[in-house]
Length: 233
Image (cartoon, rainbow, N blue to C red):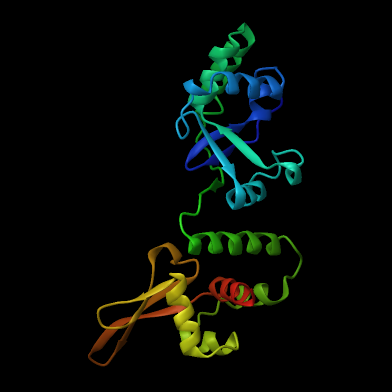
């Protein structure tokens, strides 16, 4: 068995069908057929996860080194430790039992850092994930012009200056951020970012002037680039 590339989904370490078949020294087709015949004994979320649609597109970018021919994949089953155990019981071969014991002691037990794929729960989170994936791809290229320049300078800008930089009226930009769920107004009418987007897209700085003290919201370089991309669509 080749060394498995660890992947996680919703905080769980999982295996795709091809990986599971390789571990148990069988064909992926047999794993699929066994599942179809015994589906009543599998519970989604406990033994497996099914990803498809937009979620699948994002997951394939995350796990591109594991999935073969990703352009042809229309849905993907992700097997949890319990799911792998159930498949082992169905196969019921000495080799499968031996390999599952090995999985328990190594692959599923290891908690070294693994990049996780977190499923976006809202439209805003889905857009943020898409922008994050774009950022990652750009950072792989030498000198990604606009974004790299901003990151190198580590500039933080307020809403007004960001709107100017994005060539959009400030009130339109703010209404867009409010409508997309990136920010909200507190009881005093001040703009505040939702916690999910701090510190990636926004930073909150404390300010003190004479007897007045408070906070001010700034947009990060990554935030400006994310919004620039989304506003172009």
